[in-house]
Image (cartoon, rainbow, N blue to C red):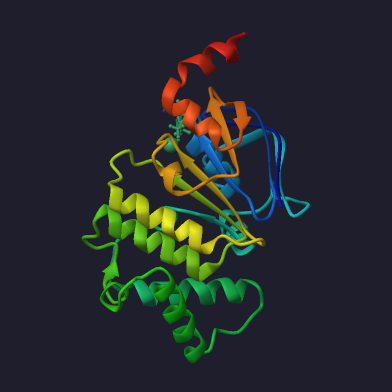
Length: 250
Ligand SMILES: Nc1ncnc2c1ncn2[C@@H]1O[C@H](COP(=O)(O)OP(=O)(O)O)[C@@H](O)[C@H]1O
Ligand SMILES: [Mg+2]
């Protein structure tokens, strides 16, 4: 599904990603870990096509197609979802109405008519039940006064509604409380299927007690310095990152 080849990316002429190789197949959950500043969020942004980063070498291929020329919107319409894409507060626009607009925009980009209202309602009901999101939450104003956990709930709801092929969840916030962790983990576990894939970015081993990844990759100084199965997360929990930094410089 996703193939990243020797990806190099810079911001303001400073190289941040220094040759990333990564293959993600449908049905897989990958965790990307690594110390602060190693380039995790940059990698997420580059996959999503954010324009502040220059890809200087290498490629990002989705279903055999090079994404180089595609805007973030086009990538989103092809099924790439990045959490925190819509962090804005929109007073007066409810979670539900925002979602309706997002879905219909995505359909329009694919040449489809608006989703009929009854179908939309059914989808909202189905997904909110699956994720145990209550009605009151759906009528709240988008992000206005949301707690950390509510922001997560909203993101996971967006992910559930948009049914992305590839979801990238960048869990930057080390202040995530146990509630927020459970919401994210529960969402990922319920939404994963043989047809989609998830990349969870975290420097936070604890999240991986709830989401069991198929593969774990450690990023350090813009490179993947180690990949393994879920046991690698436990090893990092015990040993920290320093032993990998040493290996990486050998
Ligand atoms: N927009 C930007 N402008 C300048 N430097 C940036 C920008 N984004 C990231 N960086 C730098 O790139 C490096 C990697 O950052 P980041 O990808 O956010 O790491 P992580 O998510 O692993 O903590 C850091 O040194 C950071 O300062
Ligand atoms: Mg980050």
